[in-house]
Length: 219
Image 1 (cartoon, rainbow, N blue to C red):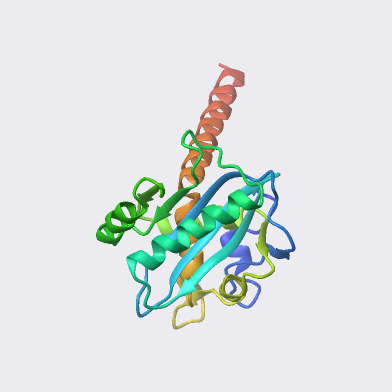
Image 2 (image 1 turned 120 degrees about the vertical axis):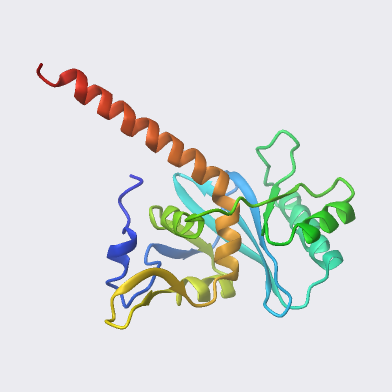
């Protein structure tokens, strides 16, 4: 059930934590679908790279990079390293190209261009689609599903364990969040296509229910 986990407001009850619907796991499922890498750029802040996949309607996440002062060459090398890890461990990309797509922070088109060039056709990278409400939409998409985090992803676990809703002067939770979220941001980029598909299906279902209700209403 997509709605069996806490909504944004009910998660506020647990000391203001954004996420209460996650657990650690030993393995990233080999049958996970929609494998995507999310990339959040940093320099003074860490550059973050995370693998995201879906299995039985749960989200699985695995941290691969969390490091400051990374050059485009080093980031490209890290991505190719993940591709090699996926191949060696029997994971398959369900894309036409057979290459796991990287969705990267749209704030740095120059870095995306550099990494694509360095990859010389080996790296499938595209820009995220940021827009009004994109942060909260992404956060709410995560909140509505069970999340499993690879047990070795210590920085990702720390972010999930500490990200909080900001509060106003009266101590009431606001829509803004506070805390480090570099890997969580990368995860949001990775799921954005899945999120748009889900929101579209949800809208279609709502319209269908409204239409059915109109047909059943007495004249």
